[in-house]
Image (cartoon, rainbow, N blue to C red; front, side, top):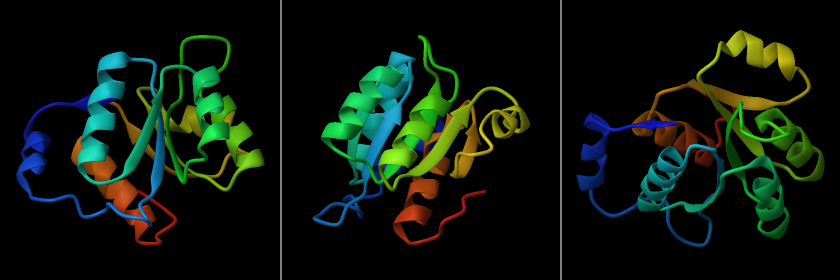
Length: 146
């Protein structure tokens, strides 16, 4: 999900701007452990409240216990269910913004999930800075990420 490199310098920018009572709650769903851990740590450093799951089933359990504002979800997950299944279920149960992350063609994702209202889709390998900018745009009320 995440790529190391020049975005690591973002860690030197000072105190997190997004912490506090109104901070967005984010749920990351990524079956690659290293990417999941790195992304979670980076977004936490940026000040957001972040949960992470390695499977669709785990994501659903976490979301029902602690509903997220934003779901950052890998499309293709190991197991019976994929990211579209998670997104579809959580949108039917909760008011959640969805950012898909995929290594596959985005047109294919759109065709497989026409009923899911995703605010954005980032192509792997993603930059942590681009992901943080997408989340920041949601925090600032913009509902469409490019």
